[in-house]
Image (cartoon, rainbow, N blue to C red; front, side):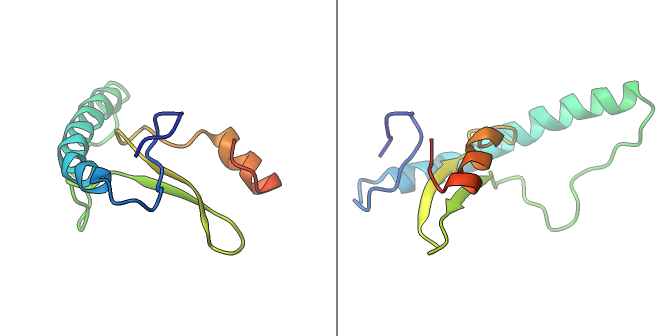
Length: 103
C-alpha cells in the first residue's frame, strides 16, 4: 500500500500493490530511459561529446528501487522510483546513516 508520503510501503499485507508496481515499472522505465536519453543526447551534442546507446547488459525495462537497511538488515525505507531521476533525497539518506531514523 501507499503510506502518508505517497511512497509504497511494505506492510506485509498482500494487497496486490507489488504486482501493480512491477507491471507499471516496465512502461515507466522505458519512458524514463527515452526521455533521459533524448535530454542527455541534446546536452552532449551541444557540448561536442560523443553519444552511445545503452551499455551491454542494461535493460530498458528496469527502473531503480532504493532501500535503507538498518544494521540488522531490516528494510526501514523502500523507494520505488517513478523515473530514472526519481531518487531518495540525499538528506533522508544522510540522516538515516547518522541517526538510524527515517524522516
